[in-house]
Length: 273
Image 1: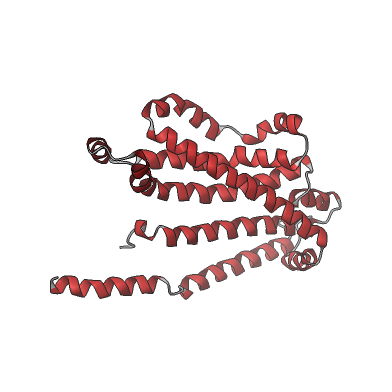
Image 2: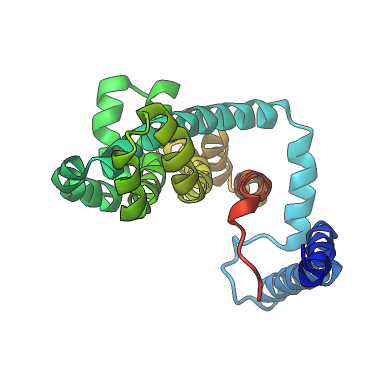
């Protein structure tokens, strides 16, 4: 081992150790940006720029405290998260399996390309009357709608990850007759995982939004139904509060998945240089 290599190893270790330290400067910038946004919101309400039904920041904070003490809120939150999580998990399984199959077999890829492009662009909400007619206003219907909305990011990213394989690697696998199971575990999955992880993270946020949207339109129990009831009662502060919690949990899930992706796929991280 040369002296240059010996000197490079501690430097690399220092960089990796430094990555785990919190970036307080970035955190402070984000907090300041949030404070500025809230101040502008309150100013716009006070001046009358926003509609009169828009609650002030303090009203929303008080409503958040009220919601946290309501058993109905926790029950609705649990129903929404159950439907969103179930639909998201089904979407991940379907999207990864179908995506790897489509991306691996070129004839299948070519024959389904139009269907995939049409499906990812099709407004899922347009299918709600048909799905509701078939399944009724039930949680099964809500989960089905979540799957129809959230499966496409995982499917498309899995297909792109499968296509990422270098042709020379494919030729090497064929020449040396590497077993299919070993090729899948050692070649295909490591190549596709970064793309799949991105699709899974996007799909998680979509599943929360889809679940709340279905509840608003169909009045299936959940956060969406509470939003509709608050609007009907002219409790706009509570409606904003439920919207806040829907966004909060979507952001929390996406953040957790991003951190998991960062640790599990550390070998795929690119340099910041």
